[in-house]
Picture 1 (cartoon, rainbow, N blue to C red):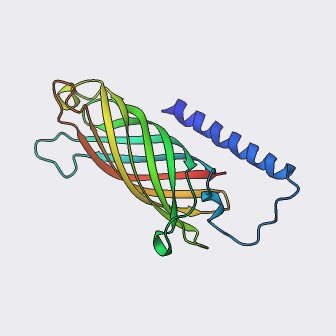
Picture 2 (cartoon, rainbow, N blue to C red; picture 1 turned 45 degrees about the horizontal axis):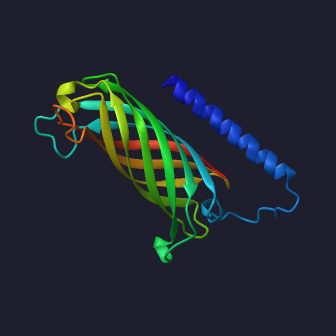
Picture 3 (spheres, rainbow, N blue to C red; picture 1 turned 90 degrees about the horizontal axis):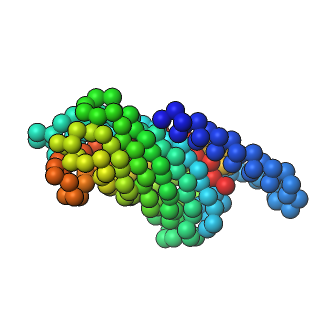
Amino acid sequence: MRELTKYAVVLFVAVGLLRARAQDNSTDEPPVAGFSADSPFEHGRYEASLNSGALFSPFIATYKRPTIYYSITEVQFGYMLGGFKEAGFFRGNLEVLGEGFGSGIFEGSGSFIAGFTLWGRYNFVRPGWRIVPFAQAGAGIVSTDIDRRIVGQPFNFNLDIGLGARYFVSRCWTVNLEYRYQHISNANTGPHNIGINAQGPILGVSYLF
């Protein structure tokens, strides 16, 4: 977990320095004349994020389900796929993100959960708004040492959905708050497959460039 956070900080500093250097060397970029959330979400732009939160299981299906509470720290890198779609509140764009995450279990069986998730996200971008809501769904792979009677084996899969919003504190930096649901199971490839259904808040910061 400490190593993941250290590398994430290095990534953010490097990206910020490269972006600042590119702006200093540019002679034809117009000055900023007020805030607009449009440009960070144009086709071909990128996003780097560092997020952290806590997830709590069981959720919804609770009968005879064990308690598993775990923190989660994740590094994400996103790419804006296309231009703006629809109109009104539904005006926005599509984004694809890759994420590596690590979790420490602070209540329940096991000590860690780690894995990779591929996300699809829709950003609701309104002209002049500093707040940009988003909805996302993802799937990936997981390694964990949780009790084998719960997850069956070390290798598992994860399915995720999330709803949240980002707030632009500057042209490139945002603070993000998200509600996350995560399902972890082995898709019946192991001897036991009770699985985990967890939910909770995620707080993060993003740099869009």
